[in-house]
Length: 264
Ligand code: T3D
Image (cartoon, rainbow, N blue to C red; front, side, top):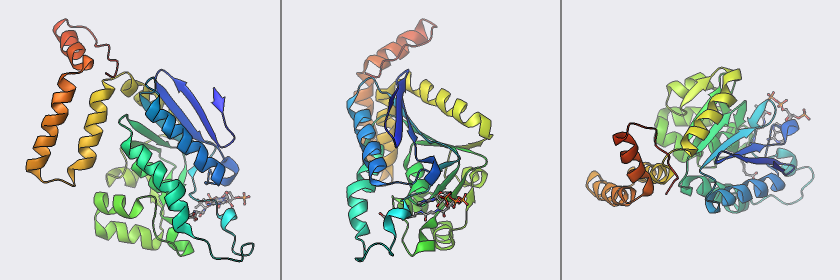
């Protein structure tokens, strides 16, 4: 296992497990954690052995967004340029998650606030402990919902719920988030990590080239009309149909045995 102080990283059976690791600060982001997460996400893009990513948090929280200790106005004479933080840290990380053509599973083990909540929502499959809650904490400190939150919440929930959640900063319980379609499932706390790890391993052993194309198509769907999306499906299916995994999947079906996918 390789460790860094702020993000723990380990690869097992094709799954890169990343654990945000500043538990005494509820895994809020300082610069070191931003850089560590980005470097691990870049590794996930580059390393063919990695076929899925599992993101979670150490301790009782998932992530409380930006470390506000680094933003103390009493210690800084100049007003900060928060757009710079988004451009430099959050947005590149979110783009890496969305562009990664491999499944990204998020196991939300506890409170997810501010950018912490919205990073979770940017992942492909989100499981949360029933004790977890999601808080759009930004309005409590005079900020706007960032890390893609104003986009994701509006797309998934529609304007009424997106506006209420972000303007009131009321906590959203994991079970309600699942009912509203913001996350995949809310699980008993003890079941979260075993289920999330099993899911990540199952996907990592799957036809990850096809899963990556599926992710791309679903993310692009809202930006296309039906007719042009049919063409995009045609292009992706052509690519999937030429893969080793498709040949193996069909052969395994015909031979009545489990398929051995390799992600190519
Ligand atoms: O700044 C930019 O670059 C722009 C980008 C902004 C992105 C953002 O994410 S802005 C939003 C920042 N996050 C927040 O506003 C959330 C702040 N935290 C909270 O509201 C609460 O901590 C929670 C609701 C998340 C959890 O509450 P609770 O009661 O379960 O825990 P707690 O006691 O408040 O926190 C436990 C410890 O974590 C505590 O430290 P202590 O007193 O034990 O030494 C607390 O100060 C620390 N902590 C929690 N969140 C943060 C934090 N420390 C620094 N920054 C935090 N965001």
